[in-house]
Image (cartoon, rainbow, N blue to C red):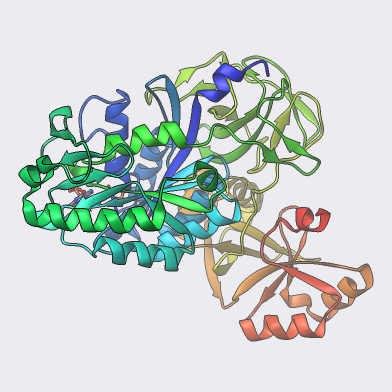
Length: 531
Ligand code: G4P
């Protein structure tokens, strides 16, 4: 346990939310507390504004912003916090899912007015797949939202997780008076548009303290006493083990834009959030405490300057110590690689670093060696798992409009799909190319970037496939299936066979008719089979 001191002071997490719930605002307030930024408004939202769905110049601009805010590292009370940004736009959901593979916990922001929304549900599903511990921040308490007990009910039912409130609001909207901290029994008074300060914190002896009536009025004091009695009876003290096991999610109420409830959230976060956790590989579990370095790539970002093809690969350190200018083993391509300018994201400045520890995320310049999920080690041949590709939701055939540029097109589409912009399926035994994406926006990004960066012009023909399933089974069964379903069987980039189903009905029928074939909904069937 050579690096225990460094590991135990690190917390790596992401803030997730449905767009507009307040993720950017909360991020900014956390950075203010960490001293990483000095003024409000410094964090530019990396969300692609709703009206810009067909404006790819906007996408490019956002791409610039999102490199800068991909990882935000700051220190707070001796804790080194790595906050990983996730794109809010649903068309970039895959990017968010991948980022979630590199964190140890998340803070989920819920808008008190809208409650659980579509993206909230999807993001929580991903967290659940990985048993990622969650803290819930119910935001916008300064607006007339849903009643707190109703909200808790809704979140528990919709997201299928047990909650444990650690603070409790006194009214909401115009009548919002503050929150009562159920743990340290303090009262935090709310003054709109004013920073929550120490003076606004009122320590009270117990919930029957008369000071409470004085501060919030007898009616609200009585209501709070009633609520707290109920809450104490139902919840009791928080069982931290349950939180770490992702069985229970602590809940805070506040208002990010008013910087209210944010400090409590951060103070609790650094106390209870998990330190860098072990991670699964195809061979064994890697513990952060191991002396030897390991890490994996979870995100690749292309250079914004089309004259430079290099890219930035984001690596999460999983164990040991990463050092600059040292050769590491790239297990997929069986090559040793080293990096002379790895950088960190401390205080949002890109600084060349000499070393990094488990929990850290570093940016590595890449000239095309990396794919999402690639693993670096000190020699051991292993591959981190748990970075699956999901079935895309939209499928289109790629049409090369300029046969003279076929080579550029092939290279471009390969590199863009390595970055994880979209998935590429090639006809089994043919050359037909189908691109699968989560949202329409990505097709526009691909078309635009192929032209700008590779001088290759393409168009897309929409296809009405419903889902892509990776298929495995005995050779004979697979061969027969491929022969009969030729036009629906493709290969992914790693040569795995994928069946494209036209509808749910077709998929179910094929599953019934082919009991010897397994249909997998994510690309991680190899690990599923190994288990
Ligand atoms: P996102 O990243 O999750 O998409 O949300 P973001 O922080 O951008 O917040 C979305 C909108 O909600 C913003 O308003 C923001 O000011 C507002 N907001 C955030 N926290 C609170 C809160 O506690 N109370 C209230 N009432 N509003 C909040 P906007 O008008 O879209 O943008 P802006 O012009 O204010 O930047």
